[in-house]
Image (cartoon, rainbow, N blue to C red; front, side):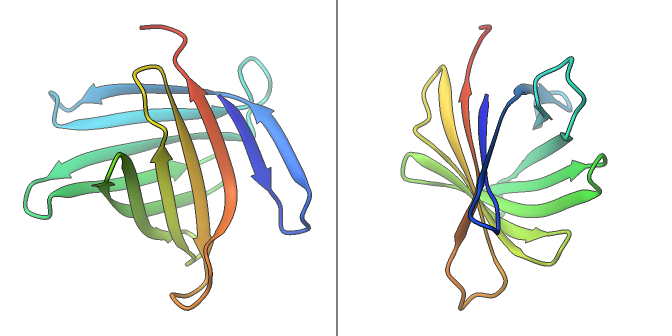
Length: 135
């Protein structure tokens, strides 16, 4: 994956990285691992997401945790047209919106946004352009 971080001071930071996705809990959940930058370089992010579908809400309960940065988030994810949109709150108390867009069998575009309150505009903080390297 290629990552772009839009910093508060309006500078841009770029990295490469890797993602690993798989079904877990006997097919009841999806777990992914996000690593940045690509190994063997020392990690600046090394976290995992667990996504569990709940038919009662017609959506996914999502838990993100990056112990390296002491970061975590809880979200609810749902399909919106061709996209997947996850809404929740992060460990700093900020509102988060993570969007999976341009989804194909071999790639997707992930957009991470945050805001302090419902009345604030969403600010893009991260983008990940992810490509499949192995079937």
